[in-house]
Image 1 (cartoon, rainbow, N blue to C red):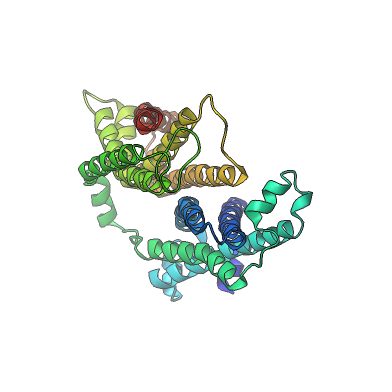
Image 2: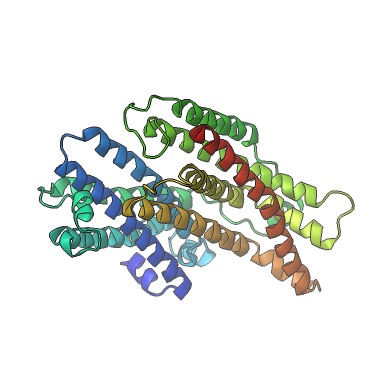
Amino acid sequence: MLALRLTRGSHPLVLMRRLLLAAASAGVGFLLLCTLGYASAHPAHASSSVLRLLWCTVPLAATVQFAVAVARTDPSIRPRPGLFASGLGPARLAVLGAVSTALSTTLGSVVALLLFLRLRSDPAGLPLGGGAAEFLGAGAPLPMGAALTLLALVPLAASAAGGLALRSRPVAPSGAQEAEEDLAPAPAPAGLPWGVALTAVGLAVEAYASRGPAGGPFPLPGRLGSAPAAVLAGWILTAIGLAMVGPGLTHLCGRLLQAVRPGAVRLLAGRVLMDEASRIGRPLGIVCAVLSGVIAASVLYTGGPRPFGPLTALGAVLVLGCTTATLLTTALEARQARARTARTLLRLGAPASVLRAAAVLRALVLLTVFAPLTWAFAELAALPLTG
């Protein structure tokens, strides 16, 4: 009840983020139900059904990541002394955040179930006609127990991940300890070498999978005659590697900004990038991986028939939307964490234009570094697939 009351009394922007999370949960739930419907209508194509289920893990992971970002930026469950005095410590706040996340994602799962059953009852009324009946599994019995199990994946995974993220969130220091931490430089993230190695392994797996025979299992349409499961595994390894590389590159950008006699704007922008490298670098790396995958797919199918169906389009929209929303939400979280420092600078006489210029400079530097990186990985990923 407390989680429901906090949700109802939240700021409109917080409610909008939770509605977006519910919409993402509805999209993933609809994809999972379509996979189940296809498996029920085509029992002889078990391998194809398993492949469809594997591809659903990508939007599922993107939705869980977005759920964690939404939970971390919820102001109603932020640690405060008043809440501690009333008995709501870090553990109970984590449980409260997990329940709030479960409410939003369960709402989306219910919407997905109602929409799926409605479309399945009358697939002829859709613009796709017979094509819709195929991926909805119309005419075949739907095991309701399996449907409910699949729909529970998003709420369970999102609430568990959100609760763990809130439980491990450090308690804000106070007094002299906070001042000492403001003066101490942020340590460099340690995952850069491992991220580079994992990214190289992922690209190698994709290149090796693209050399499979044209009649191999799980053939993809177009010019790719290989096992999509191996290609998916290679892309996931590449995405994890870029997520590990992102914090190190962000920290390096901050160090470069402060090199060679920096002014106030460069010094402030570089210091913020170093402090927030672990927070915003990981979502930046994931967005880089997703965009490189989209560019590689567009290069792969240029000039040929477009094999992307409605479910593929829905999955792509979910992954792109959730990763972009996660990045923006994480940037908002970083801004909230810097609010006290910004107020202190303004109180000491720093002009507001300096803070705005530092923010613009940070965005330009990150764009300058990550945009060519995204394009390079897209070309490397598409090269063995188009050869």
